[in-house]
Amino acid sequence: MASSLDIAGINKRFGKGDKSVEVLRKVDIHVAPGEFLILVGPSGCGKSTLLNIIAGLDESTEGEIRIGGKNVVGMPPRDRDIAMVFQSYALYPTLSVADNIGFALEMRKMPKAERQKRIDEVAAMLQISHLLDRRPSQLSGGQRQRVAMGRALARQPQLFLFDEPLSNLDAKLRVEMRAEIKRLHQASGITSVYVTHDQVEAMTLGSRIAVMKGGVVQQLGTPDDIYNRPANTYVATFIGSPTMNLLRGAATGGQFGIQGAALNLAAPASANEVLLGVRPEHLVMQETAPWRGRVSVVEPTGPDTYVMVDTAAGSVTLRTDAQTRVQPGDAVGLAVEPANAHWFDASSENRLA
Image 1: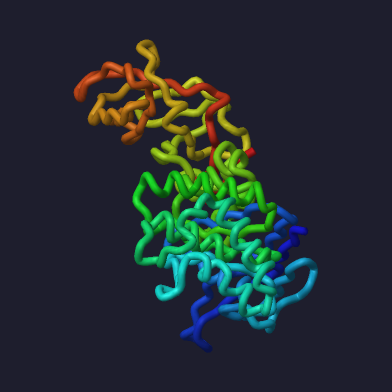
Image 2: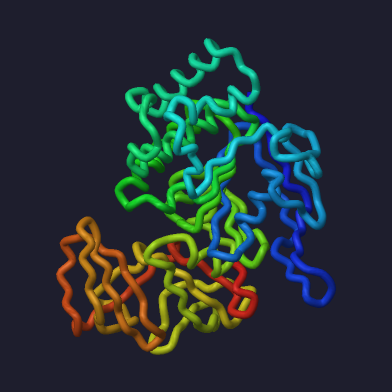
């Protein structure tokens, strides 16, 4: 049965006194049984440190980690009933795939017949039954990652921890393994925490996402929450590709205006200077629009075309369909539907109601 995970008031400092560095600040996250939580953010944001604290590979300065309601602070990793999949596959090169998968079971003195049954079940789930007699050196990167996941899955732990497991794979394999991990989670139902810097992995894999910056959770929510209701400009621009357009302007008489044009948008009444956020797919070219600009770059990607437009308020990016026919130098009008506008305070950069 899946277990819950509670990250309660976790602080982490490296060093002592004036030279100490705070890398995690008051992290509080409840992970429900069977949930798939993503920790996402740039390098140095504290996500891997938090994962190591959950695993028992590092200790927090303050706070508690509870797995299935039990406080595991001070408990060694082997007693936490967790399984971890690393960026490096960490397979034993002299052992076969079957022996790699069953190694932890052998260490636990599981009877051989029962151990073999579990190895066969896991291999079938990961579609690697035909590889059981091979050594890791005879496998591709994707196959090695499946074996690493199989070794973790065979133990039937309370908690799965993934530390950027797809970083070493090429783009095509990454997509395949993303689907494999999602399928594996749906089949096993094991509570999982997954660390990545890749926002596409975060959006496609997670039931909830914690976006981190500077050791602080900036927003915790479902992929839909994170994408459609970002808590601040950091989350808004970190999640989504191409990144969200941000335009600084003034709210005068309830209407929003930017340099060079007055947009037909009702601005929040709570602020004078605001930031308007618009996703590239929600910024449209409209011939009669008063906000004008000139096309600077056109990037066909196959299914979409990205169009960069220079305006008096700054450069913006549009995501348009593949049939868009504009050229660098073309003058265009731009428009935003009110329902697609995101508003942020210009000073705090936090979302406005």
